[in-house]
Length: 373
Image 1 (cartoon, rainbow, N blue to C red):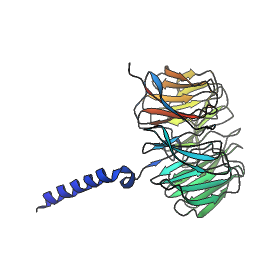
Image 2 (image 1 turned 60 degrees about the vertical axis):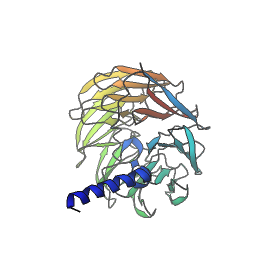
Image 3 (image 1 turned 30 degrees about the vertical axis):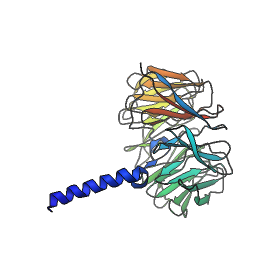
Image 4 (image 1 turned 120 degrees about the vertical axis):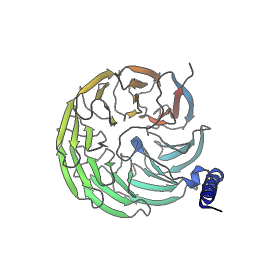
């Protein structure tokens, strides 16, 4: 048999193994808060452009504001009862749950067959998806509000004592601890080589991922609860001082600042073409991420305090006015809105062209899709 025939046989066998084994056992898949370890909020998915309507809702039975993470047709969310729920999005049914001893307002990280989650009991957990068995538990010694960040085989997490912990993702072993000197509520951003850590004192640090060594620091005038974003060679975040900052990633030098109408608590979403950010007055801004010039301004009628998500043409925003909005990235116009009638819904996540979010005190995971005209 010739080389060409052998190659065809190998390709056929690999395809057959994928078919009989399924993607779950063959193809590793990772999903996390804001789409990636850089917190960009950008999803390479279909745009939901019009006619947003509920596809289904799953009653969790307890309040949740945890932003879902969706991978391999399963949504993972935390809840106020201290449990993480895994929900089959094809059937809208519960697959399993894993309990901790504190509320879970953060989003988990799913990597192949392991889910990593942080709890307000101060622990980070690694759990086997298949059998629900705990692989390891790591005690940070203080309450955690942030979601874990996975990059280059390490989990990074900050706590309210101001400590940043680097953990071996496979073993749960402590690698190093960095003292940020004030509470860390924001989820850490990482490009694999450095971490961006934001604190409630307004200080933003760049830390070497491998060693925990501080590389630079920047001080905003007020607290930073907004999750920092790494976008190409920039670090972008909002502050309670009513500013959105863009810093040079390598040095921390300010590239631009953009003034908004009030405090920025939500994580912005950033792509190559646009930066979208909301403030607690309910205003939403489209900004050129290179120059800091405003492209457009739009509004909701409540606070925007949850992370923003975007696809190529749409920004997805939840507001405390009880609505989820789709805004055009071209001009900021409202493409659609769906009324949830609660003020404490989570930020959205996009998967397979559908919008997933938890409905806070309405106790459910809700999925929107595009209704046929």
